[in-house]
Amino acid sequence: MNKNAQQTTLFFVLLVVFLATAIIALLSLIGFFPNMDPKTKDWMYGSLIVEVAASIFAFWKQLTGNPFSEPPDVAGDDWEYECIKSGETYKHGGTCSIKVRPGPLGWEFQIDGQRHWKADMVDGQWAIKKFEAVYSWENTWGTFSGEDSLRYGYSVRLGEYLIQGYGSAVVKKNSDGKVVLMEGNFYQLPPHDPFYGFQRYKRKGS
Image (tube, rainbow, N blue to C red):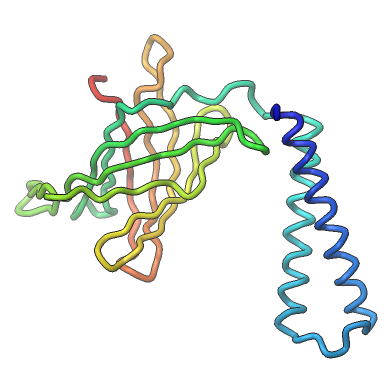
């Protein structure tokens, strides 16, 4: 199925779901379901809002297509990264690969990373500790925002904890037009050890 067919199919699926939810919500408002649980009603109205937004977005994408013809050339298995906690008292890093693919609502990307080390600031110097076994992580979703930036959610399991987070980065190109650097921010979400900071992705050898 090509990209236009995927967008058309998704639009009609969202439209059907929206209409069905709207009908049920309308019936509940006029008292057709007198015994409906209030939490179910709240969920239904919330779902209706989400479906309206998703349908409008899908319809807009169907009319306009992708906001850019090609995404930034970030694909490759030659990336190194580091995440520096705000205040520069801690950082961690490793390697990752990035794959880019067309999705139903535009270009998407997949990051598969390995966290190899961490470091604490001790007496003005980074004390780096390499892990005996690397921690694998991946993004849970990834999208391009304009022609030069990325946004994504991620998850990584550290022992008994499943860490969730959010990241963004702006691409930087060399004189040949190749993307060699991406810089931005990351946010490690609660409940376990929440913090935020600066992150950098750099192609090996650049």
